[in-house]
Length: 372
Image (cartoon, rainbow, N blue to C red; front, side, top):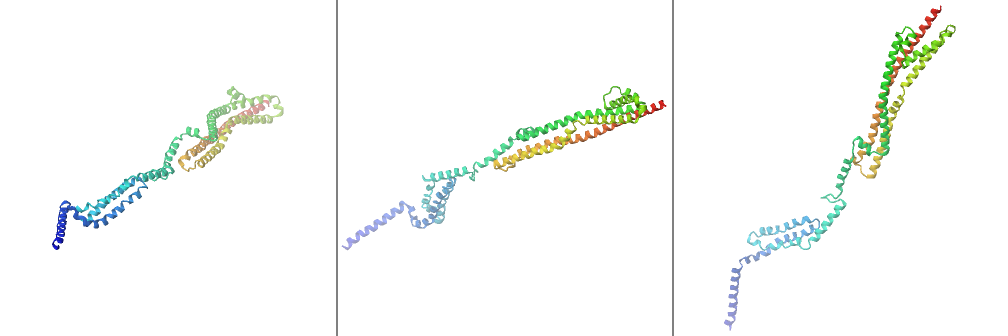
């Protein structure tokens, strides 16, 4: 019986050894099984790192790709820990968490991220694209470019009141230059005629000879000489009895009245020049104030302080002042020039009147000599 009991035990032992030998020859890589407990803890952190990828994925969809790159790093760490290339195969299951990133549940976080991005874009807070708000700048630039800053364009785009001011100042400037052209010839011709008449009166031996030399000229100096000669003829009958003092006074009165009338005739239009020169700057300033006031109202309505938006309105307002100065400065210069010209004319006409009075006095003296 003892021999029979040990025989099955020996058979089992031999069978076990045979099975072990067969197992070793069939799968030599099974020898790395004891190292599994060592590599499992080392590859476990890689498995823990990989699930972190879905936490990042809901934020933005493009960040899911780096999570897949972190998972393959786990086999490298496992290979370094085991120290042999053949033993690196078991850590391969550490890459199993990677499908969690690209699995069926991944599109939902990506869709949520896209919706969040669209929401940020609608309110203008998207950091990458800036929303639709920065597109207002090109629109404003287009509006600025649309403004024509030429004088004609600024007039067309100006307010109705500013347009009225511009038209009024343009009319004033036109009147100024019209008066300048007309008065320049009028005063020049008047001075020339007065000088010629004064020379003729100074060379004439008597009042009768001076009137003959002047002929039918219509200038004030010739009219003055004829008027004195006529008054002398009317007083001829009473001159001897009443004396010459009354005649001389009447002659001086004629000279004064002719001088005043001729000067008044030349001064026609000078009041317009004085008015334009003194009032035009203030009219232009009124247009500027009105235009700037409208520009500030536009700033308040648009809610922007961008100078490129409000500058055209301010330029249109200042254009009114520029027109006022263009009308006023020439008017003042022309007024002063004509004032000096009229003063020179009065001097020439005064010379002619004085020459006529001297001729009258000489004729009276010759009359008394002949009478005696």
